[in-house]
Amino acid sequence: MKDTLTVAGAQYPIDAVASLDAWRDKISAWVAEGAKTGAELLVFPEYGAIEQAHALGPDIYGSLGATLEAVADLADERVAFHAELAQEHKVHILAGSGPAKLKDGRYVNAAHLVTPSGAIGVQHKLILTPFERDWNLTAGTEAAVFETSIGVIGVSICYDSEFPYFSRLMAAKGAEVVLVPQCTERISGYHRVRTGARARALENQIVTVTSPTIGDARWSAAVDVNTGAAGIFVPPEFGVSDDGIVAEGEINKPGWITATVNLNHLRHLRYSGEMRNFADWLDQPGAGQVELRAPVKVYKLD
Image 1 (cartoon, rainbow, N blue to C red):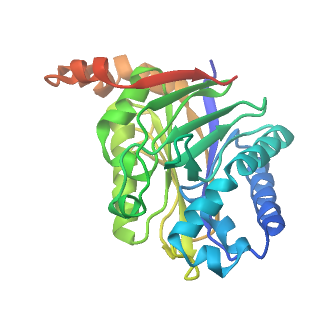
Image 2 (cartoon, rainbow, N blue to C red; image 1 turned 45 degrees about the vertical axis):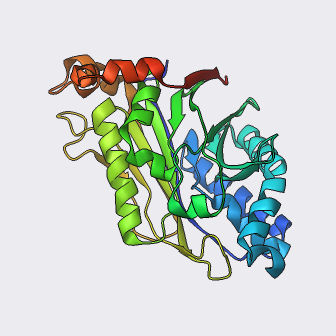
């Protein structure tokens, strides 16, 4: 069990990539740059995968339906490519999420966690935004927790982070880090997700990491405007962080933000800190019953 973890969140611009090869070159450069920071875990944003649609031409990227189908068709190749980069640079990577097609033909918003050993875990978005409902996406049904060599990790995709129970379920199953990839159009949306991520860190006495898409992509029917900054958050606590902000980027400035967090300190907080939010959660009437009924599964990746 590691005592510390160095993590990096991407402030990732959605570009008009000319080809899929150009997209692969971009992702390769971003992963290499993130690895150079010393990060063991790289976090890309929600709907980062939509960038691939531009490489397929205006008939694809100008249509929501065509974008959904085409980017989903690339999902296996996209995840495999990130797995190759994870092995090459010896880092864990949360790939930019995107549509994935289920066996029954429905589409979900899927974020994949890949490890240097080649293992792959997936979390589907659990609560859909009005836009995603209009897009006829399907909500996921299970919260996942991933046991890895760098720690126990959960993923709460954008809007999911604004609801407390998912992250609590992950923390109750051992998650000490919850990743929050986001795609938010307005500054208000960015602040909603940021507020949710900070609240989840406080409630569960864990680390949360946000990563946004940024910049204008007016060509896209799906991600035309993007606003945000990456953040690495912990509970405000004496000796850990006075304000709970370990690191935070500048709004809409491309690049990585990186920080090292002390997981061992957070473990001790849960039962011996100034406040013991994680342990006292069950003092809320009915909270224990919710945990017993909730669909959450632990996956061992490496």
